[in-house]
Structure formats: C-alpha cells, structure tokens
Length: 291
Ligand code: SAM
Picture (cartoon, rainbow, N blue to C red):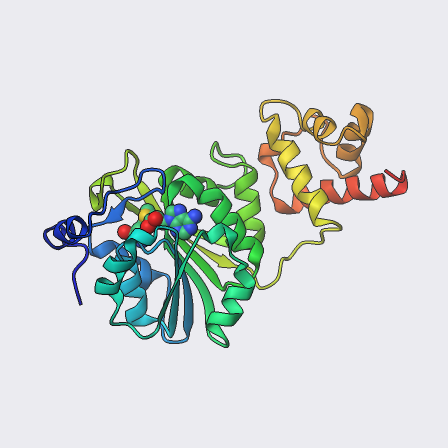
C-alpha cells in the first residue's frame, strides 16, 4: 500500500498528474500517518461497519477505513483526483467512489444501497468551507450510528459545548439533539499539506437511538432555539418575540412564565429539556390561537 502521508511520495504523485490544491474545495491533505489511523481506530470502524467518507482527497483516511471496514463509500467532488486514487486505493475491493457533491446526494438512499445490513457510520476530514451544511445533512439523514469528523477546533468546541459557556449556541443544541458528541483529539496545522491557519480537532458524534424529550413539534423547537440565540446578549423574551412575531412581546413573556422560567432568563443557559418546555408552550399557544 502506498504511504500517501509521506510527502516524498505524495508530492511527485501530485505533480505527475498536474494536480494543484484547490483552496475553494477546502483541500488540506493529511501528511501525518497517525491522524487517519487514529480517526479510523477511535471511530470504532470494524468489519461490521459500512463507512461513508466525504472527500477522500488522495486517500490517507480511505486506506485506513478500507483496511478495517466491511465496506467504504467515498464521495469526492474533484474528478482530477481520479487517477491518483486509482493508484492509492485501487487495490481495495470493499471501496466504491462516487464522484460528485456530497450535498447533492440522497444520503439515506445511498446508505441503504451501499451498506445493506452493515452498521452505517460517517467518517471524514471535512472540507472546512462546508462543515456546517455537511454535518447538518449527516445528522438529519438520521441513518448513521456515529459521525466522526475532523473540523476546525473552534467548530468542534461549539459542537460539544455545554449550556452557559461561550461556545454554546444553536449549532450545539442541533448536534446534541441528534447525537452525543465527544472531543477526541487535536490536530495541529503541520499535519496537513498545505497547512491550514487554524488547529483542527476530531470529534465523534454518537447518534441517539432515542431522543429522551417530549417535543410537540420539531420545527417549532428549532425555531425557538435559533430565536433564543439570535439575540444572545438580550433577555430570552426579546429573542422569542422577534423570532415568533405572531406571539407578540406580551405573548413571549407569558410563554416564558408558563414554561416555569424567570422573566430574566437567558437562552444561552438553557439545555435541550428547557428549550423543549419553551417550544412546547409556544406550539400549544399558537395552535390554540389558530396562528
Ligand atoms: N481526506 C483527505 C485527507 O484527509 O487528506 C482530504 C481532506 S480535504 C480537507 C477535503 C476533501 O473534500 C477534498 O478532497 C475536497 O476535494 C473534497 N470536497 C470538497 N467539497 C466537497 C463536496 N462538496 N463533496 C464532496 N467532496 C468535497
């Protein structure tokens, strides 16, 4: 197997094929072998797993996944990588490469077509310019056991942040609604070619089998969460009144009181059960008033 993390190997391979890194496609390739190895190991990839990889690049993580998984399906947007991947991962017969934009894929259909009865997982060193839409699509697809990704460290901290901390926001609630995140390890810039400006981190999201909250309406729940963080420095009632104009200012204040919170409560201190109480109160009130 070609060691694609060895820059003495990788650089001539890239120049032989006239390949230039595309910043627009978020191409920072791994050149530290411990990183893809640790991602595949700590994600718990084994022969029972069907792994969706996003953005194989020249294949360092793909190799490690193929060595362990029952099946790997890698989605790559940059077709210039085709002849290189033929060389670096062509030997694996448990690998399918799909050429195209991952955001245009029907992920649940892909997973059932590619993985059958295998345990579906997602694993990737994500292109950072579309981290949020990719993670959103993977979690909303609701078909993975776990999602293990390398992202900017700052994003990893937001994904795993607890209520009342500076990193906690609507994206933390979104991720923690679907999954239980755990920060695994940091990856410094010198592990990539070219080097990114920021430190990266690997985070695993274990998808919840059941969500232990009673939520009357998911749309209202996420709308309430977004509204609560949209005016972070203000009282929750201001955020709710602006996110739900149909409630009005007085209605927003009543919602907070009826849900059992102090009038001065701030959204950034609330966890998912508390947001659920507020969203359920809003939903019932709007339904009652026919709005
Ligand atoms: N996995 C490789 C590694 O770790 O060295 C490459 C990771 S690089 C950060 C991100 C990869 O995602 C690139 O290969 C890039 O071409 C690919 N990519 C960017 N946008 C994509 C998209 N919309 N759909 C699929 N792949 C994409």
